[in-house]
Length: 285
Image 1 (cartoon, rainbow, N blue to C red):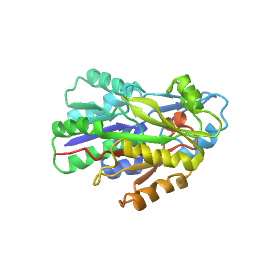
Image 2: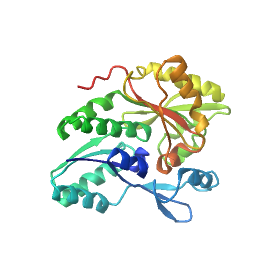
Image 3: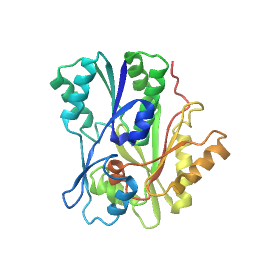
Image 4: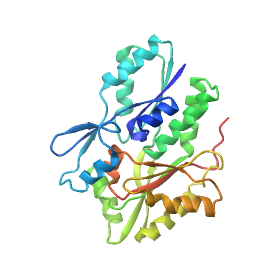
């Protein structure tokens, strides 16, 4: 059997993980009072964002304990199963390296690692593609190879209400944060070479949606048959214009919609929304 493993930065909550047949290892969030909770398990994103907006000091996020990975790998090996581990970009977290260390500690050779070079909605799309390929009967080696190819065609574009969260968390250079943080300006970000990058700026919320749609076109358009994934931090209505664009302009089904989880939301901040998609050039054999 092939087991698919990911981390909670993929924003796949327990109920969906069970449905997909995926195991999710939680990252951790530490609040300013020292309280630590597990992403996706101990607190809902909505509860967290209400707290985040009132925090004087930005909460910190941290990778899982290696022991969590080690136990999973050892159990899979004992059952004779193979594992495909899909993790958030190593440029943004030590989670992937932590998982590799755990595989060494468990002394197993049944694990294939895929650094998504992405995060959040993008990482979640890659996990869903892995599930699709597994269910189609592909081998672990074939799945890992397809994911490595697919991630070169994977894009995430998001509008950010306030770049202070990314700046304070060290995920965006201060100069870029200042450039995107002018009064009334809504910055767009993307993931480039595994890092957060400023993708553009727009004036006001309507302008942010227009800029986001233009960026989608610049990045190669949305694959006609593979799903896209829309996400929001606080309010589902924030992705309604994205769904309208997909249906009315591109004449394709609505994207899957998910709330962005606590770890990524710590850095994106309340009011963020975006879309992850594979571009039209992707060919999966």
